Image (cartoon, rainbow, N blue to C red; front, top):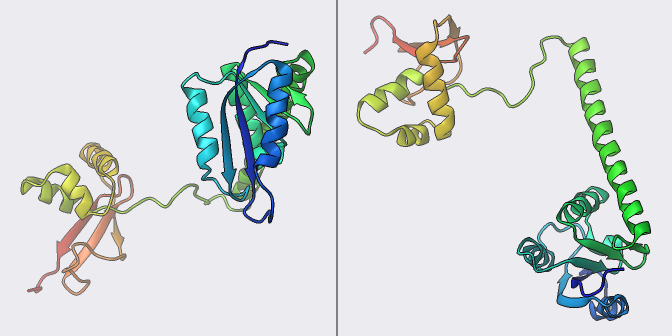
Length: 241
């Protein structure tokens, strides 16, 4: 076993753990580091529920890891460290890639030993299997949905943007970012749509959704939308004031 590793000790108690103290975990963690001949670089603690994403202590430990100050991590038990199995597997993989040893006392896992490395390889294989099974389930669900409803569309609904109105605002001297804010869309989305509209041959269809700008109405204007690039055109009706 390698000695002299700069080691981070991590302990956590839940806010619901009445009467518990992180010191109860830190004592055996310090002893474990001493027994291995490892040097304690820092002690990182949290007193929050395991379901919380925001953990100042854990974030600080990872900051030290990223800075290259840590070579090993010791925890009392898996559930004291990770929110979920997925969280645990992902962080174990991150540690493995960085060459950092991980030790969990209660599960008797120590990746600084040959047996621990073998266990970590098994954990990585299980993580990969879980990812593959998840992908297969998603693909199966999509295939089943398409089989029952071929017209199903995926992803977020495509935004309808008044490209003609946006181009008029640009011609008036407004910047693309200002116009995007006026249209309530992102800068990149508006830029992409304007480029597509400029190259589109346009196939127009009537559109009855809300008109833009707000001062227009169905009594005075008719709206058409391109079925390809989604550009919108407003036409003033004859006799409209």
